[in-house]
Image 1 (cartoon, helix red, strand yellow):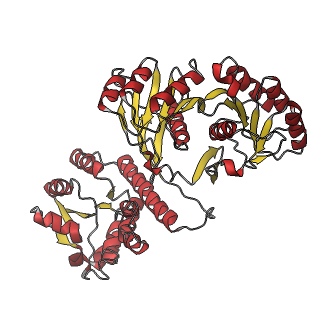
Image 2 (cartoon, rainbow, N blue to C red):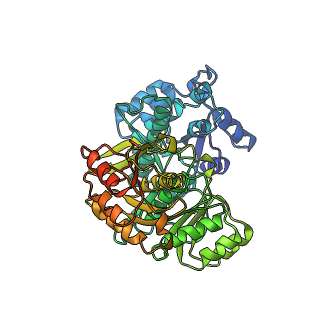
Image 3 (cartoon, rainbow, N blue to C red):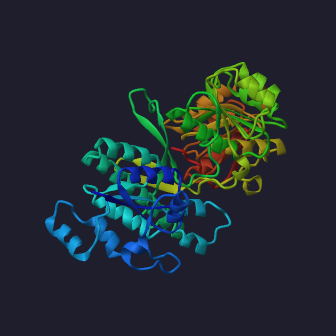
Length: 509
């Protein structure tokens, strides 16, 4: 007995071959608009949907499949005699397979020139209705939303393996697809910062070998509309990125995007271990490397300029997990790619001023969402609170320190010059321990005499200032805001330290 399939697709990939194989399996093909024309042009016999409904398409195609002869044919329970009698009495033929993919709403809103009116025209109504109806009735209807499933469906029909589990699998895929589609639309139309319901949608990018540890399964999903500042699409060389690689690379990329001068970031475990700025990317590499030659081993490197051969030669001398750059000269790429496992990524930094506005962090039973910390502390906004004024070089170093410390896990204290980090202290339960770590790592370095100290949050006591003073730190930057700010200021004055306050905290838990 002949079966009926309804095909109505925006993405016509492999459509004709799928339809021909359905015809070979004795399916009648019902179709609409552009899909019908594409099949007819390929010589496939097609019944127009208007022939089924007895009603022409109207409102510029907005109404064509929203009709009882379509939806009753999809929704009727095949094992319910009353349902089947109602179909027969109404002269409705059951629809046994629905292959639909939706208007390209996502592709439309990705174009910067798209108007709201144009976007709204790409909101599909009939497609989701047919898909949801078919998926609800998966016991009797095969539902296909992804062209990648055309051949598996044909194979299942041929060998009669289109059982309940197979149909349920396809139905679940439909509901995931329509939920993501609706989420894109609702987010596009939403003006509220924090609406009463928040629906996010992600697309699977890849399965990962494991998560943070080898016994943890993991996968990488990206936002359906990913940030323009992204590491996702452009791996040029090396092994697949791991779970931890992706987290570190993302942190490094977001950090390097903040700097205007040629800059090199060395990242380990979501914290910078070396940051250098200079007039050239090679000199910036030297500064970053000298910051911590031990910790940079096995690190993730992000740079904001093209990598040249001279820089690549220096990078090649040590083991690095990942290098991220806007581009590589041919010679530089050839040098770095000699190591087969190093991951070489290309990142478009032209969108550095368009980072994600919000960031999400999952917690048990929920999610936290906040505005991303894009606040940049500028020298004109610094408030000098001590008797000693910072020098011009110290001001540059203080601003550099602020750029770095906001990317370090709290409690965060860094010691820097105006061109590189000297010591990084992070993640301690009290600020004085972070200060001690940063200063002790910085002290052996030749450039320590030009050192400043930056803190991501206020000093709750004056002990950090005293420790810094006794170790020859000459300038400090911190947000202020403690009830004991006066004690810290007095301690700085006692030792002749210049201290500025920004009024902006940069915690990164």
